[in-house]
Image 1: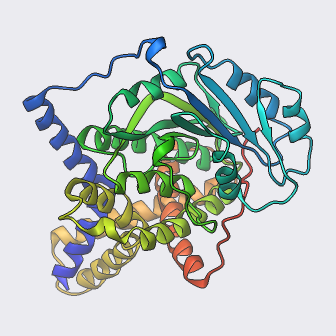
Image 2 (image 1 turned 30 degrees about the horizontal axis):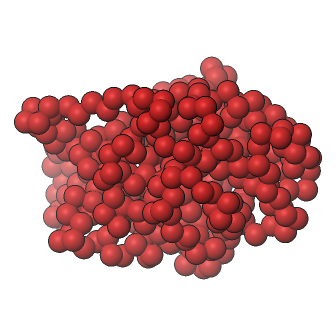
Length: 391
């Protein structure tokens, strides 16, 4: 029982903290031996031709801001095309976009989901690079320049930008928790990229070599993750570029964030089932290590290990116990009480930021469990599910 407890505790710790520590140490050693690689800014004349693909569904309230943001992006003259695909939109989104002749609009009334729309848009892309971003995220002016400079390296098959969450002082736990989570994720992605490759890109901002793009099945939930991982599976690296970033507001509330996380968790299980070849550590030594450590554990066993660690700790303390077990039990109880207090404060709209992290952490792990159940029940659709975000 004690052995199983320590295994459970270690797995939970490794998934959320230990992997980051190990990665940091490896990167420090690598820098000491080889130095730190610096990617130079590309000359405008050397930048590849690229197409920015933006999928939008009923975004009339924000689409003008997105268009203005897109047209303000800096890039080599004549080398950047913009495509908006608005399939299924029933509001004024297509009409607004149609008023900008410099943008190519693709629209059809039927709604089949984001990935089907993106696949259709890709048949119109004839440039070397395709860049994807969401309609409700705003990019920094240098984003395209920072992303496309990496393609001078022929080992690079995809480049992932950084997601940033706009946080206001009055925002709730969902906002503060989501913001903290993405800051930590950004650090892990920087180190993953420096070690070998990022394990999957987020749809807010990522790019691929057009020739390496492979359509994923239409029922794919995490299409951005799968598209980028197909490229990694083919032997190319996914590079992380934090100086190219997409900013969006946080989820409207914890309920909306939970809905989004459950969908991601269900998509995570689906992705694992479709990327079983990446468990082959002999064929993908570094990529498998990163993929299992950063993604697979979070999406599968770690929430169960957390529950098991708590239960076994309680049983051990109820028996012979011991100082170390008593302290660990106390620590676990205090952590979950803080999370519960965060829930109570959230319902009363009292903002105590110190409670946001444990609360959000527990919500995130609950979402994994709910996502696993939803996936195996076959109740998760791949069709667009817009989460309400703060206006």
